[in-house]
Length: 229
Image 1 (cartoon, rainbow, N blue to C red):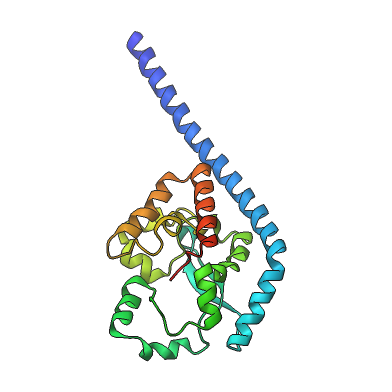
Image 2: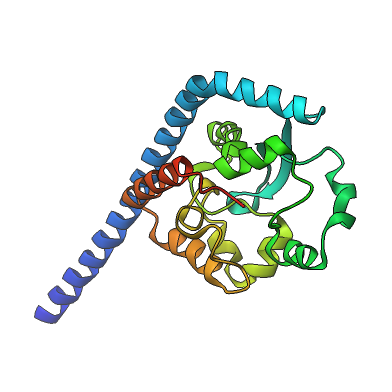
């Protein structure tokens, strides 16, 4: 009888522990979504004058579309368009020949380029200050993204560098900022494997406290103009 009681107690403890974990997860997701919605709405209202000025500057620097939408893969594999202020020339796709062999290699392995000749003058400023990503607040408001999460990626990027982590990575919404962006954006690369480790660290350890730390770290980096290269 004692053995059965012990087994029952252990089973109950396990069940309670699992329930607490699920409850904590649901509570975290609810609070996170509520904060995302209220914060993105408030930010869009407060920053609307600045965004209008930036939109005008983008157009004056290189007439054409002010916003640039690119298809990315979201939570549970759902595709969506992530929005940014356009930072490249309108004919950027036809300017690939301007890239050096080293830049071309970096483009196809890291999906970014240092000293990219296709970036406009205002675009260079927007990227250095990360202001080009302000339109992503619309993505957060529409529930495609969160303020904090892994970087939103294209399908080929995920298949190449997260093939064995595909489902785990896409179990959470991508974010405007994240652990990788806040702590090692221009240092941790795909080739070294550090970028993948940092993104997956967040997925496995996501919490309100970690989100808050990442947000404050990001704000500090933006104020110091430590945006994307």
